[in-house]
Length: 459
Ligand SMILES: [Mn+2]
Image 1 (tube, rainbow, N blue to C red):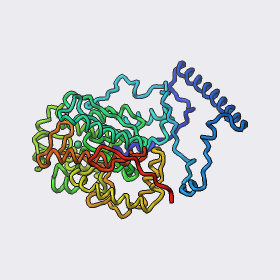
Image 2 (cartoon, rainbow, N blue to C red):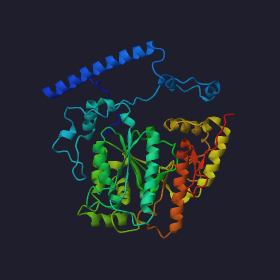
Image 3 (cartoon, protein in one colour):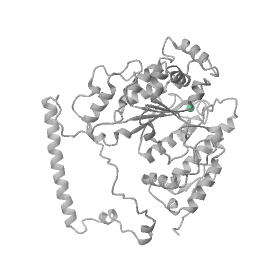
Image 4 (cartoon, protein in one colour):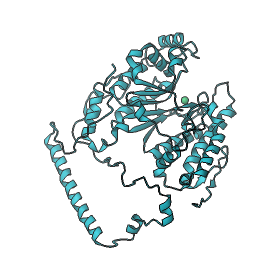
């Protein structure tokens, strides 16, 4: 069922709102919390009045209110008011004592046990945990993972660690939560099917998140500043890198890539995941789906039903049911093919250096926490860079499809060397964007060593 409500918005409700179903104990507890909260606010008030009254109560107060020297003031852009900020008031120590979907005996985190009324259940949870409501309509949880056992490739686990570090870096810079899973959540859904049960479980574990963003273990962020244009996806529930004509007219199984996708945490997605998973190896229909998919997508390389061709099939064959809520993103590298990307990285490095030479505020040293500000500054210079193939913009996500860092197997189209060197290059390219905030950089993209970033005097 395509639900017209994609649960994009949540009404904010007062934490004081009196719920109808409360037992005496919970009433007492929450009233107790209210009393303690009131007492705490009173103490805060007294404390703040006292600190205003005393000229210098402790040596840290000067540290909290630094005086800007004239030169530093010049570098500060005038249009930005840093006093206005996002609210970071999520209360991690409080779960509403009232019943939510978590208290239902029917609660099930597994694929194959459909959830009903998920939009209402999520909305209800947010009403009862209102500290999570601000920002809920844009909140993203990143998911990734790998197999439960050690990698066969001797450098496989090291590569996976670096790919994961890259995702942690990106998530930290943009304030996203991230979950790495390396347990097989459904015993019969292995390899490329394994992510579906993880996404399903994460949707239920994170009712505060509007979007679940799956990023394969062999994909990495090569632009640490670029942010998903969420506004563009406001009427859609699933975003994948793909091209409608390649799926619908050329019937190509590579008309999209299922290694990176953004899925809205809503009932539509619950229903879609159930339908998608019905083509998987845990069903008696698995073989049948293998032959249906192969006869529909003639270029499919292997006989087994796979998640990517399954997704292409649903877009092509069940268009009315699903396609209007699926956004095929092709404007930028939502994920991009590593072979066409890796060779452009040196040129991109040069172009970005030229921009920084021209714009002093891009060279200003800053705290990592405010990195998004510098991404916005840089964007002013990237208008002519373009996106995707042929562009000199940093590619957003580089995907090492066909390389398999963990198993060490790789498509015979490439040599192992080009796979591993390509990964090292892309990982160091990304790492340089992170490390410079810590004062260091890799001078060469194939070399693990680092240099201190030279001190750049403001002009
Ligand atoms: Mn992949």
